[in-house]
Amino acid sequence: MIIDCHGHYTTAPAELEAWRKRQIAALDDPSKAPRRSELAIRDDQIRESLENAQLKMQRDRGTDLTIFSPRASFMAHHIGNEAVSREWSQLCNDLVHRVCQLYPDNFVGVCQLPQSPGAKPEGCIAELERCVKELGFIGCNLNPDPSGGHWKEPPLTDRWWYPLYEKMVELEVPAMVHVSTSCNPAFHTTGAHYLNADTTAFMQLLQGDLFRDFPDLKLVIPHGGGAVPYHWGRFRGLAMALGKPEIEEHLLNNVFFDTCVYHQPGIDLLTKVVPTDNILFASEMIGAVRDVDPRSGHYFDDTKRYVDATTNLNDAQRAQVFEANARRVYPRLDRALNARGL
Image 1 (cartoon, rainbow, N blue to C red):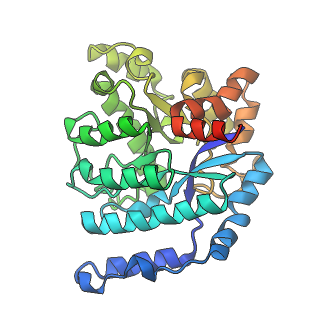
Image 2: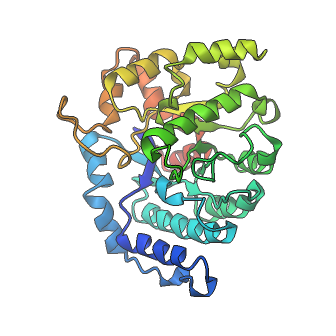
């Protein structure tokens, strides 16, 4: 199988965004907030939103299954308070669940957490449990910066996050460390904030000893790890200066990177620097970059093409990147596929 570990429902019907706008408009007067039952999206609308988008690209590119979550930039945890975020997260997660029910062979769910600036992570546990136990989701997206570009929360290694990590380990679900919209004008959301966050998260993990306390916790850093592969020597040197073990020993039993890198030299570098065991295939399709590259004539986010072409992987290693690593990092996915004889 070819498993894409990073997909978002970026093509959701317009009614979803309209409901969100009504929720935001009612922030000063909660009595005017829309009810979840007021969002009416038919199954045929969901099918239409996917058939000529994600599903068509799965078929065209030869991928089989997408690990699917709500649109990352729509999480917008900085808007409203914890109650607002909880309502919005439940709505988005339920919609992704409907996608997975309609197309069980094509999509498996990962949930948005109801984070909010200053709100303790344990407030996310109930929604995580609901999504895993009731909806069959296999992971979550964890935002290290709910403030939207102002970085007001403790680093990911701080004990402040531990109650959520404890529940993730108990449920056997990894997190993709994924920020949302930037409300800081200094940081473009997808071109700066996302990649800054990937790099920042890795450095936070390198500075701390999180995995000494949580040896079974698994975190996926998307977008090829941001600057991490390009500056691997810097991070190794900083680890030495901080008295930490080599990166492979310190982090790589628990930290993984995806292939959302949109040119061949980038994938070549990723697969040359990062051990194959720590790379999961992903495209982020349909995500930040949606156009065709005029130099190649192919979509920028057709990352399977780059993984196929790199000379840094042999056939066995390519199979790891495309399937085996995802099944190892997401044990609930592996069990579900085994139950289907896959």
